[in-house]
Image 1 (cartoon, rainbow, N blue to C red):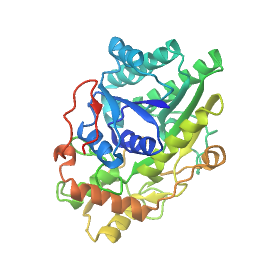
Image 2: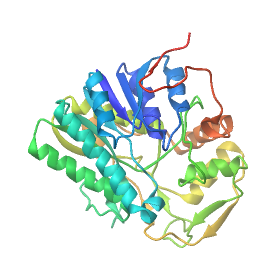
Image 3: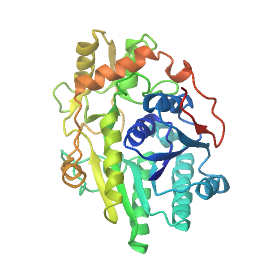
Image 4: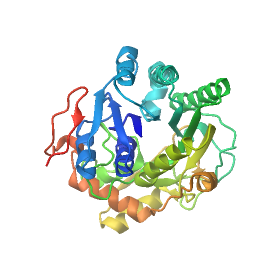
Length: 354
């Protein structure tokens, strides 16, 4: 089967491409490299030994997008592409609403036009806002607190309406908690631009000496040490969740939301301690003011994913820390260090180098 992967060069997208290729799927990958780098796709190729087709496309350009559909057989879509920084979404909400919503509308219109009705959507636990209790299950009240989260929630609602208009659609909404880690090879991982927005790459860059110290937002929460508690999930476990959700879309119709998390919460300082224990590297940190809108405790109930998809997170916090550090240590400047491989051009197929 042929799977279109939007945003396939990104952190979660690249790891999912590895799992899809290893499972025998044929891929068509599109990305505009706004939040990613071409090198990640070369390394996906290196890891799998398999070729795939790539288009450098801005999803807001409908003519370019339709060309992808015209030139390829596509059986299903996994949709990762989108802007993803919460802080930036607050300062520039119109950018997020235009990019994330319009790109998805164009994608769905083309899927409808070409009779492709199997979709896995990259949503987020941000759709829950500030939960009243934990663990969080899929039937909790949805109330996103920032423009980024609201784009995810609006898209979920649009996809529900799309199915209501045509019950042949089969859609999986995957609500991620906090992806960290990297591929065990150390070849692909999270490569943030500028100062990281997420906790683990901030920790690894402090460990590597790229940043002076970690900023911890708040220490007065009702948790074991006063710092916020989150559900950290290994990115490879998350990628496997996409594979299983994709397989679900081929077996039944409907719109189904799934939490993808471990069901185990760790505080910021517990994660720091685990990282120090695994790596032997000390992480200096400084307590700063809490951020507005941050929940004290947030972790998933992923029972539904286990019952309906057969998916459960397998990798523990120590493995998450070890793999994150291996990626950072081997790639101190991210994907800037090139590996041998074909030069990327538009519409070029990635060919395995013998």
